[in-house]
Length: 272
Image (tube, rainbow, N blue to C red; front, side, top):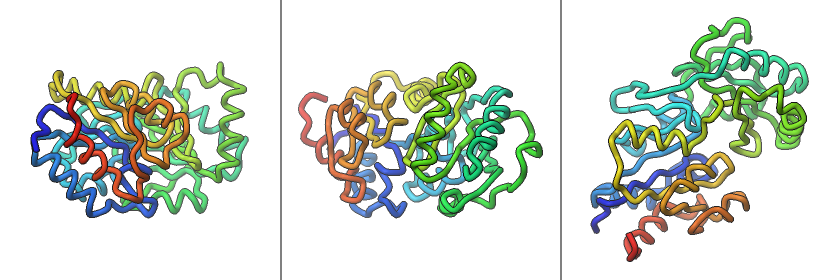
């Protein structure tokens, strides 16, 4: 099958990965068939370097990936950033305020390839357990102030609901960053203007892709911009309703072979 006109980019957690953070064998086979047929495949994830590397290595990813929810493009073959942007210095004040207001909140600062755990909880420990290199556990005042790419807050969904409500009530104060919920238990602070769609556009620019049919797959609100910019935006069945409404196509859930179903669809598509 000839896929040489198609660039397929997929979210990782909740889309490509199953609930227990694995990639199904049928999905690996489908991605291999897609690439073998000339297609270009990569991932766009909220994960930083070390956690995204787990996925990149399992797939033997040959194309740079969008990581940090669009704040960076990273080449795992060469182990280097092709592009990245940073949070403003005021983000440190924002994080400090959230920590004061929400004392159970797990807080993680991602800086270059560092994972800095400022404050932990059970969900934060579960998060970093999936392939993260040994994190740096240090206070906010011990982290160098440059090269902050992302701040991640982690807690039970009802706590994250409260964090979002607080941030929405104080939008003008948090106006220098982009805040996005990337999972029920995650709320992220990113550089202003950053999202997966913007990061994917930067990737296309960096590798000189201009004439491909873009297919993007995702499940959560942080995938919206990427799906909206694609020629074919795909939501998995477990996606948030707002994502399904924006999608052009809905496939099976992330535990049932979503990549396999997407590749089968592309085989039969007559308009590409």
